[in-house]
Image 1 (cartoon, one colour):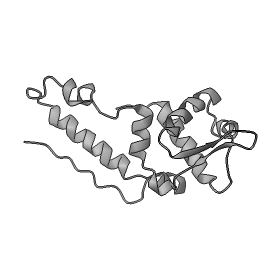
Image 2 (spheres, helix red, strand yellow; image 1 turned 90 degrees about the vertical axis):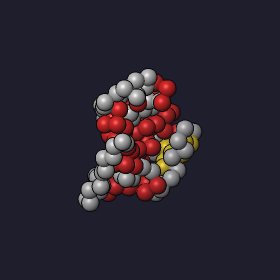
Image 3 (cartoon, helix red, strand yellow; image 1 turned 45 degrees about the vertical axis):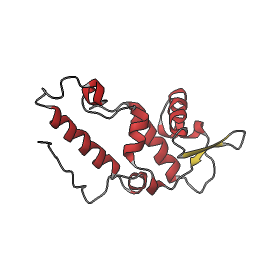
Image 4 (cartoon, helix red, strand yellow; image 1 turned 30 degrees about the horizontal axis):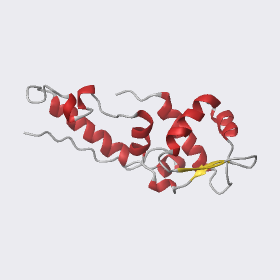
Amino acid sequence: MKLSTRSQYGLQFLIYLGRHSGEGFIQLREIAEQEHISMKYLEQIVRILKTMGIIEVERGAKGGYKLAVIPSQINLYDVLLKLEGNLQPMACMSSEESCHRKELCSTHDVWKGLAQNIQIYFGSISLDHLIQSGVPTKPVEVLYTMSK
């Protein structure tokens, strides 16, 4: 699985907002300049994040963006899933209907286990963790389970 720059920049955007919470609305131009992200690309990312309800938007001269939710309530899995559209390790795992060989596939359970571990890992990291110091200091226990 390879995440796109959309996820990288989306997280940078959210971290910036989190580190400047309490300062009111922050203009997108400021964030783009400080984070070295194209304004046009950041506008696309913001449109996606707005649909999650985790950022507030205020139009006008004193407008901008700020977090609508406290950072500890925002987990990476939800953000990455929204930005990427799919976090499945294999295309055939996107939906039950897309895997026509599931019963014959020797690796299906491996990909299913990986998908579960991706969700557990990213779901255990909050935006607050990233704002404070990065990933949690205590590693998340990731479990691999195989169906029999």
